[in-house]
Image 1: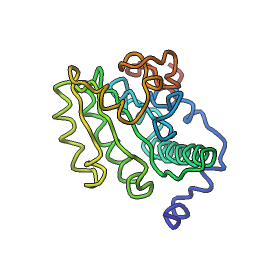
Image 2: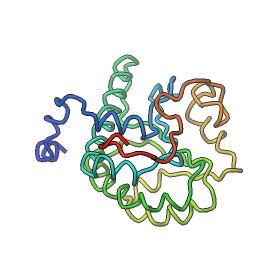
Image 3: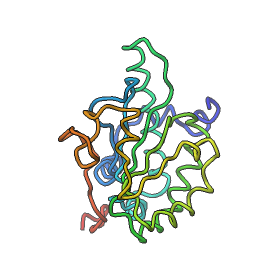
Length: 212
């Protein structure tokens, strides 16, 4: 991991100031940490993947910038985990992820190459970052799309994925690892207004670089 960080120029990425491309991704990639924590005091990440437009993001900022952004997000998550562990005198290296597939459609297939490129970098270099992944509100088309992605995952990561269709009871599974107060209301919880940077943003309709 240390050798990769040096070869990838990770220290320089951490020290670099935020760019307009970073702000653009933060605006259009519906990802963030929920207020509260899981039952072990760890942060809970939520990605509204069904609302995302990965091809649009790649078109506007480029593949390399997207991958760098994801690496920095993983690093920030590790820092958040470490901070909470120090405060609680515990030791954890991973955290749960919820991926909301509501509004997932066939157009998301165009984002698979970018998603694979991101996994090729983050999976081997941020090992054990996920304690579990909960796929919720998965439509019928998800099985087809997941079939395109599952082969990219290492067996350990794939074993941590739990999939729940739109009519399945994902709430019971989430409550095994986090309190109701952490879960957003639209996913069956009671927390309102806690979707820090995870609101749905839809497909991109303009050209970032030209300001159109």
